[in-house]
Amino acid sequence: MNSMLLFISGPEIMVIMVIVVMVFGADKIPEIARGLGKGMRQVKDATNDIKKEIKDSSEKQKITTDSVTDTAKETTKGISDEFQRVKKDIDDLTGPIKRNL
Image (cartoon, rainbow, N blue to C red):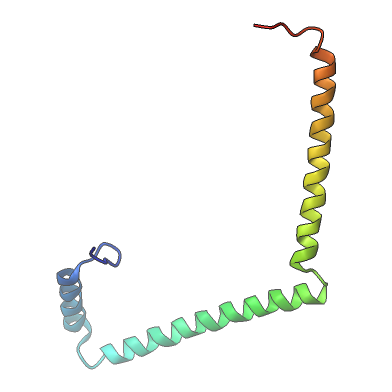
């Protein structure tokens, strides 16, 4: 199985690299790579900071996954109970009307 990055194969990557060397020159490529690395690091750090802020905020307000799960279960149970009540009412109403087909 061929692993392809964005549907680009080996020869196409080589052509792109030759064009990059011709446009920027061999001495500028390390600078460009360093800049890209720093940019990727900043994005990763920002993402980690956002995750930490969300976690700290949820801990501060004492929101845990257990309480969210319990609330979801209570809501689901309430909806299920209401659905069963409506179904029973409909069955009671249509019981004498139903025909066997």
